[in-house]
Each structure stands twice: as structure tokens, then as C-alpha cells.
Length: 150
Image (cartoon, rainbow, N blue to C red; front, side):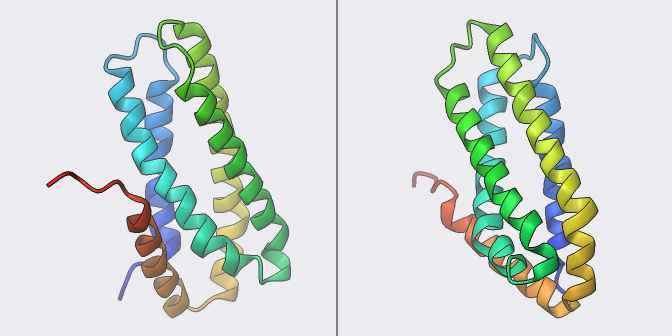
């Protein structure tokens, strides 16, 4: 059987939390490369949720509010990433402070999804639907991934 979107999202959540934790420390080596790698996994994740997960969960009254909040949290994280993109890496204290705010926002967002949204999805949706959503989610992510030069 194909993987559930819930399982995929939980795996990605674990990975991005680990990446954010490392980037939130002072003295991180290869910070620019690690930041770029984190964004390459986080941004497609956000787009996939916005294009596939939230449109479906917003249809259900018991999931609507948490879905709308999730969309707003994504917007906040994108704004913070944009600020971080233009922050000077030479000012490590400021850069790390911004990264810690991103880390806190993402951790909050993940807790809400995993503690509230995912259990509601498991109650409301069949395993076939969760697998279908996963396929659509993966396709949405691929559509925004950068294409490697040939």
C-alpha cells in the first residue's frame, strides 16, 4: 500500500526540525550551505501542504480553523525566511535570533498539525484517500523543486 500523507509529513517534520536546530546554534560551520539545503526541503513542503493538504482539510468543519491557521503560519515563516535571506551572515547574533524565531514558529506549527490535524484526518479520511493525498502532495512538491542543470 502507498504511504499515507501523514507518515510523509511526519518524516519531513522530523528532518526540518533537526536542520533548524542546527542552524539556530552559533558557530555552525557551512551555515550558508546548510541554510540553502533546509530551504530546499522546507519550501516545497510548504507549497505541497498549501496546494494539497489544506484545501482538503478546510472542507471539514472540525479541521477548518487549524487549516486556516496553518496557512497563516506558513506566510509568517516565508516572511521570516525572506528577512533572513537579506540579513548579513556576518552579524551572527542577529541571524541566529531570526533563525530561532523561525524554529519556534515551525515547531509550534508542527505540534498543531501532529496533535490536532493529523488525528482528525485519520478519523475522517480513508487510508486510500490519505495515500492519494500523499501522491498529490509529492507531485506538488516536485513541481516547485529547482531543476538541476543538464
